[in-house]
Amino acid sequence: NFNPIKTSSIISKSPFIDVRYFGAKADGVTDDYLAIQKAIDSLSTGQMGIYMPIGNYLISQPLKLKDGTKLIGETKALHGTHTIITYSGTSDFAIKTDSTLVACFGILLENLEVRAPSGDGGIRLGASKYGYGIVNASLRNIGIVNLQKYGAIGLMLQAVVHSDFISVSID
Image (tube, rainbow, N blue to C red; front, side):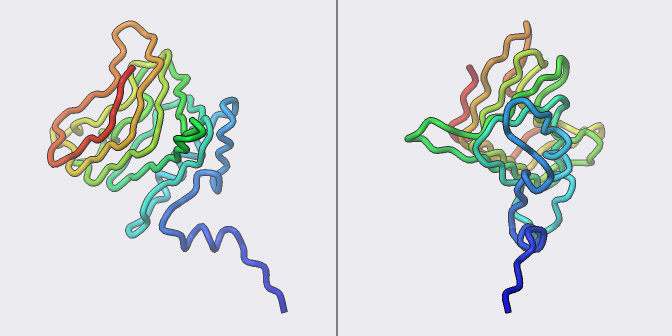
């Protein structure tokens, strides 16, 4: 007897959540904001994070990171292909921590290129409305590019402690 495995059972048992499971297309045309944000919001304790395969993920609203959010992109250095997040909004940052949290722990962003041509900035890891900040954040192999709006900020860090930043570039 052959019993096919359901994709949903594989996804739910994986330590990573693939954004395609939530409907992300990564074609640079479709708005993938809702799919990626649903993936972030669905993270539960014990899951490693969100996996974003190679492609261009267009988002119309900022992605809000919560405690323990790990966005892991993909890169193939020999082929020059990688995971791109393109923010089409005209205000705010492309990726930011959720300011309604008391504090935010364990953020990881890895192997991502963030483009925010008309937004206020690329990535904001900042203090909450309670004044607490970010603990144990890691940014690894991150490129923030195509900031064209006057006064745009590539990377804003507020009250970030016990964190590491490896190969982060802002062009």
